[in-house]
Image (cartoon, rainbow, N blue to C red; front, side, top):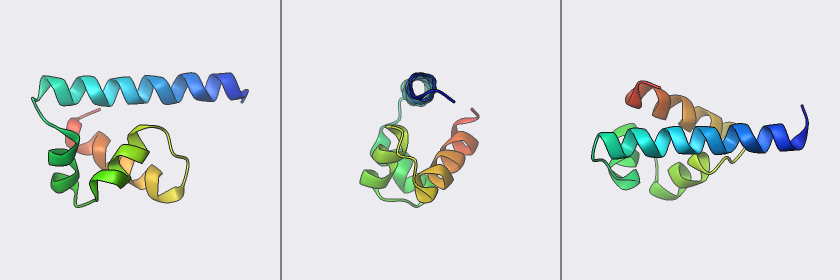
Amino acid sequence: MPEQQIMDIAHKVESDIKIALLKRNMTQVELSHLIGEGPQQVNRAIKGDISPKARKIRLKIAKVLDL
């Protein structure tokens, strides 16, 4: 997959998460407490970190936010 396409997908995921948080009037810190992860780890996952841990966090976020 071309790098630009990967970056576009990462930005879309980030936007979707931020919109879902706004709709729920929830902060990233509140989200981090809800899924049992640190706020910095959640932020990195939302920003598109590709580590296995960030992928697991994004799955937790998707489940909690119904994405």
